[in-house]
Image (cartoon, rainbow, N blue to C red; front, side):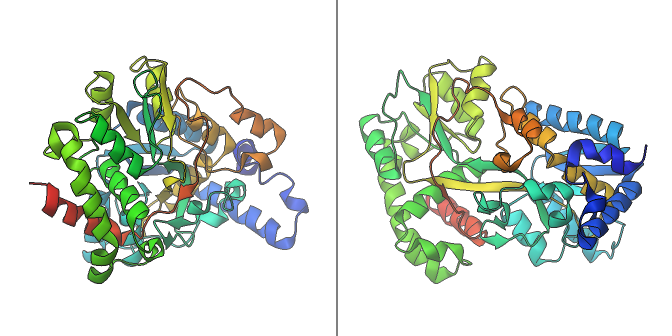
Length: 402
C-alpha cells in the first residue's frame, strides 16, 4: 500500500485528488512526496508537559503516527516555550542552519511566536499547504490566522482554541459576575474570596489583559505594538481598577496564587469562590476526574472574553521538516481533533469548522454536554498585540509584585 492510500484515513482531502484541477493534483503529488520523505523520521516535538492528560494525548498521537505514517513522535517535555525560542535563537547565532537544529516542532503562540517570526527563526510557510487545513474554521475562528494580533502567514498551524473562562460552584455563587466591574462588586461583598494568579503566570496575565481591554479608552490601540505613550494612556484605567480590586482579594491582594491549578484547588477547598482557565472544558475535566463537585458551572463574561488559538510551528533549522508537517497535518485531522475535544481525554476545543466536515467525520464531534461544560459561549475578544504582554507584566510586577 502506498503512502497516499494510508493517508486517506486521516486527511480526507486527498480523496479523488487525481480528478481535481492541475493545481490540486500537483498539491496532492507534493503531499505524497512529503509523506514519502517523512517515513522513518523522528520528530522532536517540544511541548509543554504540565498536564498528564495532554502528555497522554501526545503519546496517543505518536502511536497513530508511527503506525500509519512511519513517523516517530518524540515528546520533548518543556515547562516554557520561551526557553525553546532562546535555544533556536542561540543555534542560529552559532551558525547551525538548514537541518542542524534540535527542534522539529514546537507548541507555541503569542509573544513566543511573535519573537520567532520577527527574528526569522521559523521555516518557510507550510500551514495552508497541509491537506487538513481546508477544514480549519478561518471565518468563525479568525484567530486561527492571527496570533496575538500578529498574522501567522502560514508559519504555524492551528492546533486548538482557548478562551478565558471562569468557573465556580453554583451552590455558592448562583449569580456569577458578567464583567470586570461586576467582579469588583463581588469582591467588595465577598472580601478575601476572589483572586487571580500572580503574573507572569499566563492565566494571571490573561486576567489582567481582560481588565485592560474592558477599561482601555481606545481598545483598538491594543492591536498595535505597544509604545510608552500607549501604555501610559491605555493602561491608566487598568491600574486604577486593580488598585481598587486588590484590597478585597485573597490576603488583601498582597499575595496571589502561583497558578490557575492552585486557584482551582483553593476553590475546591472552599478558600476561594471561583477559579479561571483558558480551556472552556477545564471544569468538566475536573468534575470527570472527581476533583470538583458536579454543581460547578462555567461561564464567560456577557460581552466577551479574550480568546486565541494555540499552534505548532517548525523552526528554520528543523532536521525533519517533512515529518514535522505530517505531524501537524495529523493533529488537524478530524480524528485527532475530535479525540482532543473529548472531556475524558483533554477537552481542548477544535479549530475545525465541524459543519463542513463529511457526515462520518462530523459525527465524531457529537456528544452530550457534560457537567461543568460551558453551556453558552460569549464573543471572543482579540488578544492585544504580543508586545503588550511584557510591558504589562513588567509594570504589574513593579506595582504589585513586591
